[in-house]
Length: 171
Image 1 (spheres, one colour):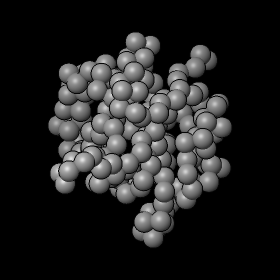
Image 2: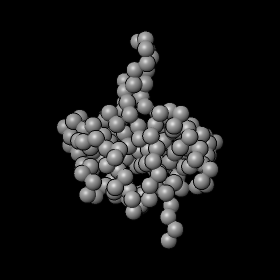
Image 3: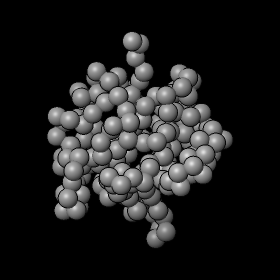
């Protein structure tokens, strides 16, 4: 994706008070720990050029480990730059659960999967839904509600979101 879409995502996330850091595949193992609070659970990042191997993130958590986790690390299907949204797939290994049942969600997105706007997202997600009957969550910023008065973060999911963009590297 273009550098413009990445810059737009970083800006949109900033307006939502969501930290966003760019990293390379080689720097990922050093970057991730600055965004993780233990105990951490995660979902394999097989679709990306990075791995959770050796990071201390439990990628095969039990239900008890998921309940006890503070941080969840997941890949995202794609990001929507102008909204600062990430699309979290519903997968057999629990990507959606790991992203929702923790206080902090660390979303990892490949720079090539940053879409400029909602129109591009509908085009991509719509075709996926039609072809695979998949589902997912479009998340924009931390969970929040003002149903009972003042704004409360973390009412329906994580109260803290961090996004790591894995930048493309030249050969």
